[in-house]
Image 1 (spheres, rainbow, N blue to C red):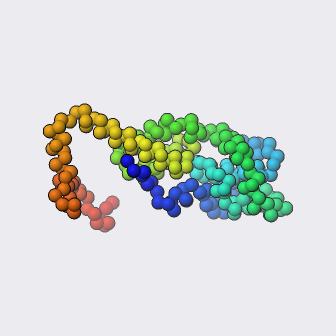
Image 2: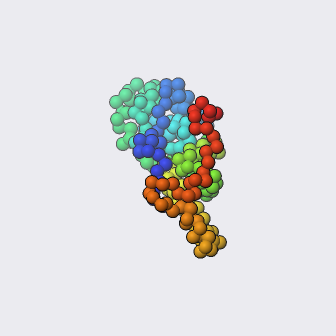
Image 3: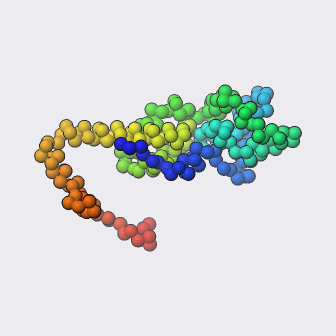
Length: 227
């Protein structure tokens, strides 16, 4: 099976990028409430303080974490102003260089623990099982992605990156196809296979297959008739 495409290139960029929040959303999601405020007070480094608030805010909004290179400059500025650090206006450009991967990782673990959410690694088996259930419903891969994302958020499970979704959905489609092929090979005789082949052969490349003639549209395609 060829590599499936869940989203268009521009959609993938938006999917993996930290969410764009308006002023009201920033005020809500970048605010500290208990028990996060207690954890914040334990931090000494100012860059770590900014990073913690941003990690928490983005997670509360989207249920997933982002690399510091995905943080929006306007959000960094907002947090600095919110903290009242008037002398830190020139530090924005240095944030990514000073917010370490180690600090970011620790903050992710703290946010998950204090939020009561499960990490993606903890629930990966459940994630893969959910994919199979959705694929068995014959949903399009793109639809499977959105359903999965909704399921994870509603069940307080950390959401992964787009590439993790793509690989897992692709593999499940391959596994499902191989299982169906094995069942058909086991239970169909050569005569049965020959009959099925007749249904998918075409006399001309532009003609429909025989099996396509059995597909009937039972709903009007007119927009006014679709409810």
